[in-house]
Length: 281
Image (cartoon, rainbow, N blue to C red):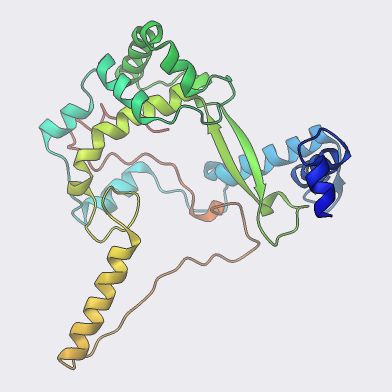
């Protein structure tokens, strides 16, 4: 076996072909079952099954069996718990016109060779032709900020499905979806992220252990150990509770429809400015 790999390892022969064939068979989805348990083997029909599954999964507004809270219901509830708010000056800074230098900075912070979205243009393309594209990107980004309307083409995505380990591959629910967005959409999002990043420490609790710069899961682990050590030192009593999410029914991809709701919540901004920062991707 070692001799075979030594002689043919770098040749485009049968050994390479067999490995590529094995890898292709692992990537290809041979069939899935529809809602009636029938095998669907046609490639286009398989794509349609996944499209229907994710359309239903992420379309909470179409589920009449679930209570649909209105934006006013959500706002009323959140106002009662006194969440931190941005000042008028901070909210205004978030809606200031986007300048080319901020787009250039976002380009520098974005990896060059990430897989592109449906339009086929990677971040590398925008970096190479930065001088030509910056005026056009600045114009479209500011148009989005002014109107709150994002071009439909920027919201398109290619969904790549990865099978969950140990799960049957004949069910759409047993695949994890990865959305490949267009580079211009990611760039616009990066500009907004850079704007709100300095304000996260004011809006997010120090106990938040993820998705905030400088906050790690280890911080809460260390905090829990310190509390336990303190309680042992003075013989005080206490209770540690771990909260988890459990939903009945078959497992879904990422989150079940019962807990998905994309209703925009402007409560973090002063009421007089909440209508300006209305971009939600």
